[in-house]
Length: 173
Image 1: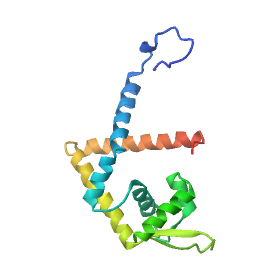
Image 2: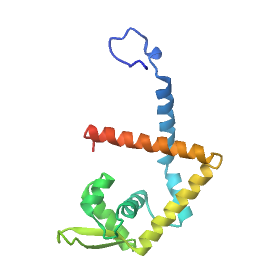
Image 3: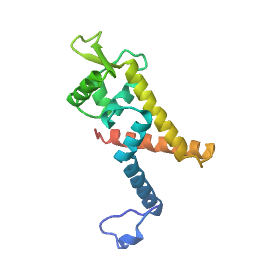
Image 4: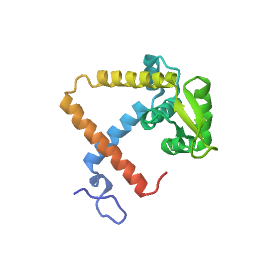
């Protein structure tokens, strides 16, 4: 069992290092830095031949993933899923609507609410981005066996679920 760092310990801090956690922290930091780089986004967008910023991709993706019945999602629901405020979603939605990627309509239950949905062009744009990402991952993992990819995917999904649960348990928005 790993020792914890803490006040009152007579063991020097360098002896308290939890090597697997240290290696994991380092690997996570490296992955997060690479995945957040603007050049990766630009590379994928260029491959997809799409004119979208990160926020646009995120909004289109949530609609693509969550609007399975293609009736649209309310702005407040999109904001909750994206973990941003409703005015931020509204501003981005107006841009995407002007570009022909989103449509809007009334909510059948609450006529004051607006539902956003992907247009054919919006669906084609997010399909292209997801296709570019798929091709990129295929290239990056070209030396991995299918079993290695399956194990990694399972572990990564478990980690993501664990982080989500932890944040929800601690009421972190």
